[in-house]
Image (cartoon, rainbow, N blue to C red; front, side):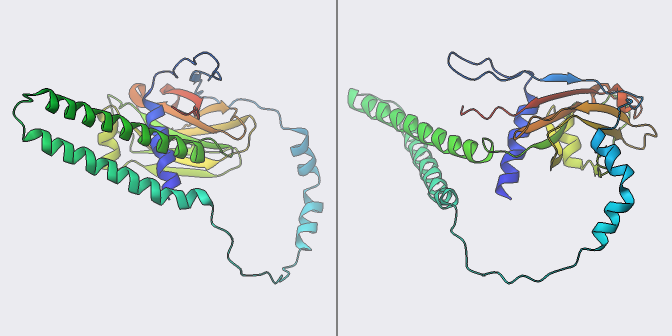
Length: 268
């Protein structure tokens, strides 16, 4: 659950950026967001040789599947070792709370002073500022650890986010159909609509995908004809797809602007 929330935050923050920051010297380059064309007509994609083989041998494969039988296998019920990263998260949360308490105490003490009249008091202020710097450094290290755990070791997955708000009708819901036949429809809540009107972004889907060129269909509201787009997810990375609803016209899915990019998993 925490991993999903963290990925959702990362995806939302990434969706608000117009472009990725430029890489510095010695750092790996990160591809800038690329526009994806949303088409009204489904592209004509030739079937792969493997798919033609499976279609030609469908009856044989089904017969072989019918021969499968359930077999009971006894396995040990011993508990497995807990990932040491999860054990470290409790200490990280406690340290973050302690740093917050120290900063709050410093603020309360500072409010009670009208004027720093002596060099000693100014020195005390400098010590407090140094303490805040240390707290920020520690927090940055904790965030880097979370970034490494949850963003740096991904399986091939796709996150779909929405941004912008159409000037006409309320989109109501978004429906995304994958090439494997799965279909997911998400109705926008009042909170999500308000976030889009305020210039934010909302996540509507996250799932594992195959790292190959795929064809997706998207529709908004009760539109009869979906929009089609081709996507080539990067292997073992978190791929993001954003639909900008600002230009959505009367439920015409092909009128939206789509952008795709790969999550930058470098430590900030």
